[in-house]
Image (cartoon, rainbow, N blue to C red; front, side, top):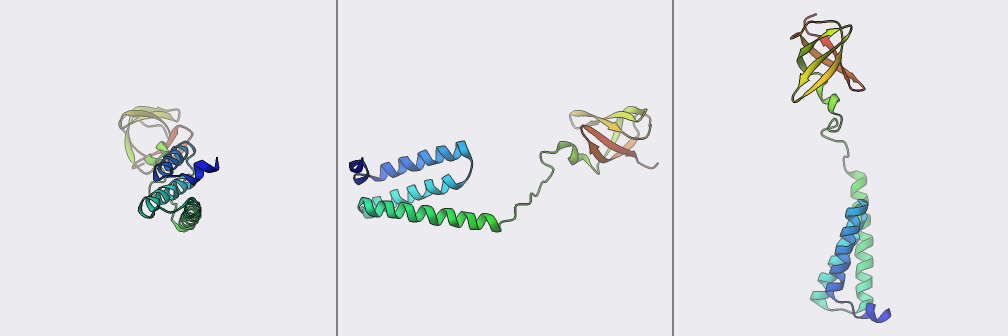
Amino acid sequence: MMENIVNMTPWHWLSIAVVMLVIEMMVGTVYMLWISFAAAVTAALLWVFGFGWEMQILVFTVVSILSVIAWHKYDLTRDKTSTRPNLNKRGHQYIGRTFQLSHAIENGVGKINVDDSTWKVRGNDAPVDTKVKVTGIEGTELIVEIIGA
């Protein structure tokens, strides 16, 4: 085992970097990315300077620790608020928009066409083609109010 560590080449370190990247893709924690980065840096420095196994381990360890700490500090300071908070909340994207009823609202329930889909709406009774504004959402039903009423 020790013989394998003593004879590490840049290709070994690049292989470690690739393995770490694959693990990162499966886990998705971001930290393995920086350990992979450290292995790639170690490979590059080993290729340029050709130092012994002790220095390789030291470089890998130091670069790993520094890059993970740097990422962690950056991650704490960055703004994590989304510029598109309703991206995965499809119905919430329609709040404030106006549409025409495709099916009359009868007994408080009707339908509107939104892009390529039909949404069930709740609101005051109104005939087909009445303009309505989406004011909220409950479950999969849009809450609407009649415009001009």
